[in-house]
Image (cartoon, rainbow, N blue to C red; front, top):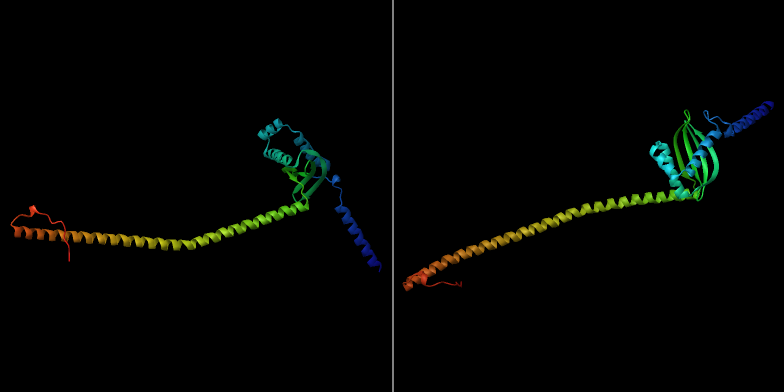
Length: 238
């Protein structure tokens, strides 16, 4: 019985110890040479500098600064245009995940809160990226996700409809080819019939010419004259 009580007490102590470890005050942790206040001052100093930066200063940094600073200035301008001017600071959080450390400073803007995030490589504490993102409610996130899903499904169905139409067009092509071939054959038959009719007319004309010459010669012989004195204008066949 005593052993069971001892084991239960030991487990309770372990649980309390783990809970105490999991609730370590982030302001007392050493972040590879940086304190909580150092990282917070970096975020807040960047936000204050961006909020008070003149257009001339922005133009200077955009021309001479590195890519990270240029991206930060552009993102800040886009965020201010969408969320309004900077008002005050909100919560500050530090998160370490593997080889990456993120410091997130919430900023209260006129229209919507946003988060300024510094992303560090933990072992060297070099800045990998600085981002500015709006803070959205769960309902807004769900609405955006639903809209994206609807758009994705609509695009898929639209592509399927286009593919079906193309397949239907493939069935029309043989019909058009048959129709074209029938029309070509009809034109050929008309041309052949016209040629045959023309040849028959030429043959009839040649026969009439020979008959006229014979008749003219017979009349001239009967009259004792030449064929120059008269003309046979027509022949009627009976």
